[in-house]
Image 1 (cartoon, rainbow, N blue to C red):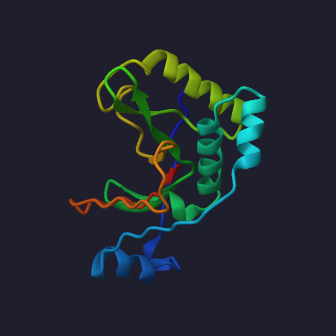
Image 2 (cartoon, one colour; image 1 turned 135 degrees about the horizontal axis):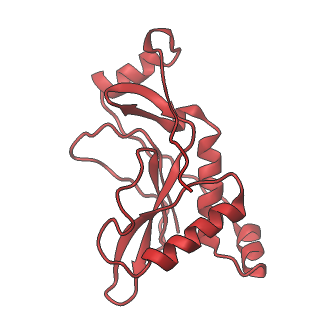
Image 3 (tube, rainbow, N blue to C red; image 1 turned 60 degrees about the vertical axis):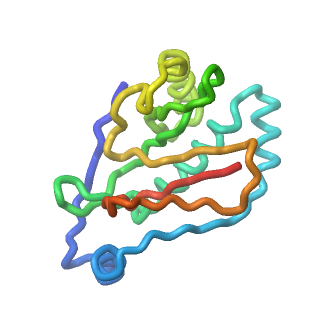
Length: 174
């Protein structure tokens, strides 16, 4: 069941973040990366014990964390600056047959098992569909989350060469 995506406009003139936002979005457009290490051993073991997919737990925890802070949900909709009530994860699904991937999204739910089931349903329905957006155009509140478990790295940065207005976090892990 698709929930309505709620977007709340920000009163730019009354917003205490307006000067910082204006500076880094208009005067000196800047992207940034933040890298930190976290120990996910307990979470990984718990998922293995329950025979659940670690990536889903990782995506859930990241999305839940981002959704707690309004500043991580800022976007522009029809030229209006605001924030979404919640973010939706957009993630890659790997195709072993030809070593390509497709992007897929599923609605976030505060309830982990509901979120988990939404992902499983999408995988069954669209997991073998090739093409960049295998389950359709993602909603406006979709942000990118992924993991590359077979590559060792300490930092990842993604840069848009089109200077599109994209303020959501891009979350990666290995």
